[in-house]
Image 1: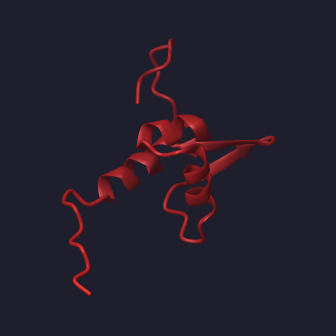
Image 2 (image 1 turned 60 degrees about the vertical axis):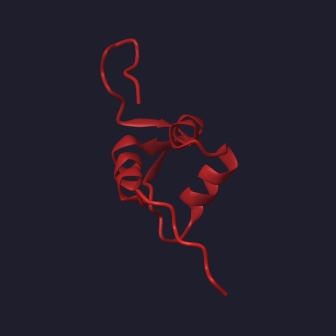
Amino acid sequence: MSQHTTGIEPIFISVKEAAVALGISTWAMYQMLDDESRPIDSRYKGSRRLVSVKSLREYAEQLPTERPQADAS
């Protein structure tokens, strides 16, 4: 994630920015945010939904580093 023009790293980013950071669609990002397990934290400022950069990074760090094996059934 890049720093904004102020040089301060953001605490929250938009859902669209979070989706771009993960390389997924905005729709898929909303699906993740609405999932009961809530792997990524989000908050509301009025009607705007903001995604926690910290939780986004933590989620990304937990992703597997190797491709899952295909099911042999």
